[in-house]
Image (tube, rainbow, N blue to C red; front, side):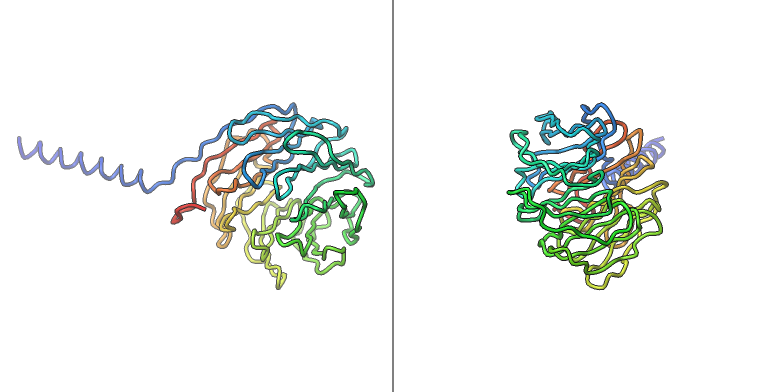
Length: 328
């Protein structure tokens, strides 16, 4: 009987130890906090570079600025009569820019919520906005097929970038400010110098390209498309590097982690996915939104992802650091 008891005890301990080992090896399940406040779908989300503020733009024509730590709404920015389509922070975290369906872009004080500048000379929706790294310029992507570059201090139009043959959905400055990238309904990515000279056209996707994002070191670019994929591109050669497959609907947004090792994507299939940016391996699937996921970004520490959705919410996901890393 004693031998039988010892065998049973040994087996039980083995099972417990095995379970503990599996538990220790398995990554923690991502958890999410939900931010509510918009009355309709949330099209865009941005996180200030210092990590303190979140900005969101919605179909309800409102831009909201949130405290990232508490989730409290600090400012509700009104003044654009069309759907608010995109938001972006300046590099010093002091300003927020927005683009809307009323053919305007605005610049706001992120701390006070005060409107600083309105740029009205667009022929159609302003689909995207991007600050230059030095904070002196703002680029706008417009459904009138043009990209415009503005002086933020004076509001003067500096350059008009012509080349796209259909609506332009996204624009971004390279981290060093030496290049501008844009993409659109024509399925291309176009690279420009800061004065508006077209440098290269990438025949990127078979369908519309919705958003592009530079890797933090400026050597690569990521794109997201209606064809259900995201891709990364070498900017020296123009070659496609990796295709990220797995979403079952349009991929709206890609964004790199601060160290460039991971890529997050948001999709029509309601999921947000985190990938290895080099291999294309799927690392994590974040599920919880109940409608299209339109945008997602990493926090500066790389341990959190913030997403937005047609379900009127933002979600803050705690995903931890990548395997084999002590953190970013």
